[in-house]
Image 1: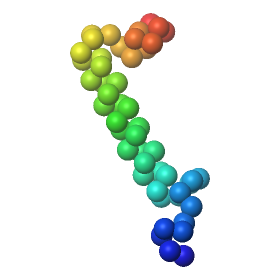
Image 2 (image 1 turned 45 degrees about the vertical axis):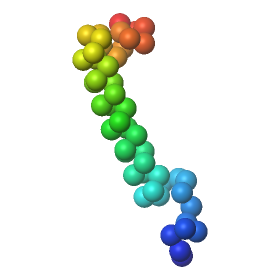
Image 3 (image 1 turned 180 degrees about the horizontal axis):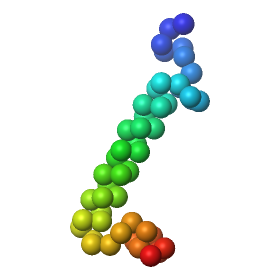
Image 4 (image 1 turned 60 degrees about the vertical axis):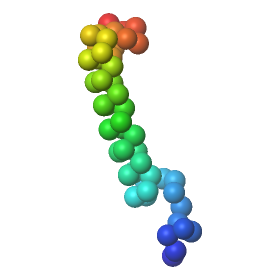
Length: 48
């Protein structure tokens, strides 16, 4: 099957790769925000 014709949804390598990339970006943005504001992520969203 041609790579262009493969599905990009579900538990396929394409989706898992992007899921991992976005998770890493979220962690980095969260840590950066903590460094800038001095507050934890939970406190910033109202749980702390």
